Image 1 (cartoon, one colour):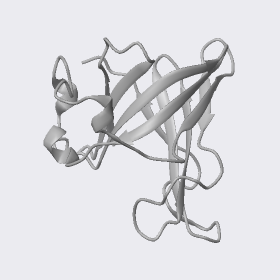
Image 2 (tube, one colour; image 1 turned 45 degrees about the vertical axis):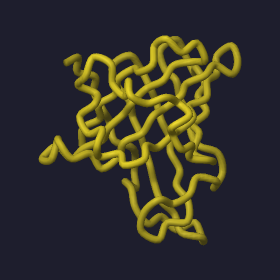
Image 3 (cartoon, helix red, strand yellow; image 1 turned 90 degrees about the vertical axis):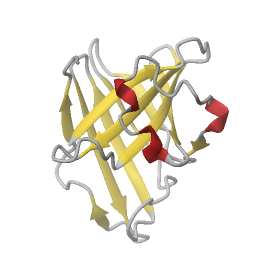
Length: 155
């Protein structure tokens, strides 16, 4: 799996905005997930990452390669994914850790009732563990023992 992320809308003063695409390594031009994240500081060492999806998202495939990705859009054209925010805390000098809260993030695919995300961020990697669960808390999809590790590669 490949994860491409790029800062967008740098002129906005209401936090940081990031566009992200996830693709299978064998199909790099067809993302299976495209999201926009809005990062805001909520405390001295804490941040919230709100999650948004794009309408007709595939038309933006590969947008991370552009100098100013998503420049034709504005934040009000996005659809927020309620309950899917990730809440981060700085746990030491170099690691931010965060997760969704409770069972409020809708399932999104298959018969999952809700989704959880756990994320760890350092300067050179992101570990992301997304899982889908049924109404009884049984895991339906996602890795069972830990998240995907994405290593930073400057392109």
